[in-house]
Image (cartoon, rainbow, N blue to C red; front, top):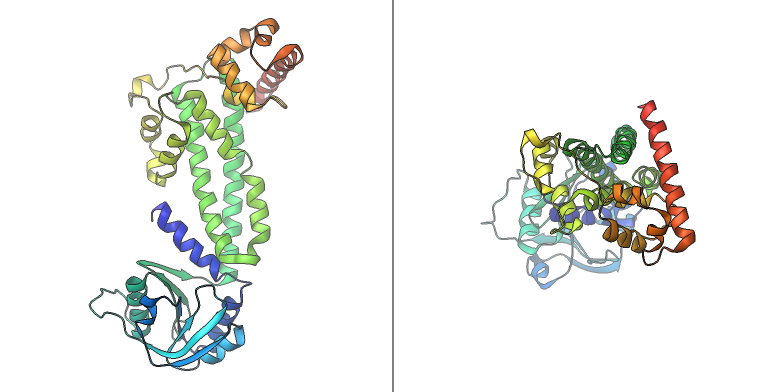
Length: 356
């Protein structure tokens, strides 16, 4: 599923997540095993498909939704999910629209969704599951306890990825200070970052589906992803080809599948290098964005000016305090702070290297 389609269906899932009145009503229907067909939206395209039924126009409440679902017809809800407009309505979509569903209720749901582009919620009385249709998209909602369990498993996976990624950062720090970072070293960090981001996307989908029940998982996720994307952007700034904006590199990386991420050549090409395995061990010189960003209270605008003047991390490391001071926005005090900060980061990199 493409990023745009995934975001679209997740927005729909978020609308009826646990904690919302409509989801509470859907849960009541599930427990009663009555089944239901619920169309969200009252556009002209929707109303053209509605035949008969009762004009209810009442506030949406869980109990109202549950009671009205006992009738055979569809329920029409306003797009803002605040009011129930019609009940026991017959939906008459274009029967020439292709559907892969088997049950009568699910066939109608898919056809209406494709014809109107609106959200249709279908509850199977036999299988007792909730299926969402929106346009040409379909999503099956899972039981809250199942989603919570899967989310917790994914969080544990992300913790392991984060630990490995932190070790990769430390290793790259050492290599950059020693000026011996090769293409494969840089690609390895980007690769691990992208693998972690795949897990992040999966957890975000779980959080959408869990609604209020996913708050604790959301807090854990926020802690685990701290600086991951920022670090990747800084690595791209350090090693990516200058003619392409860093954000463009990130966009291309995010579109890679797991299998494509595991193939280093894909990342190498995206970063603008030739896919020549004989060059994988060639040393690259960092521009210094990431290391300089680790210095306390050093503004990004000043970092850009330092990189512009010195071009590489090694040149910055070799620069005297007076040379650093000559950069606009640095000054005497900040120049000393930069020199001291780089020395401390280098010492820490050496210590971390011995631990890896």
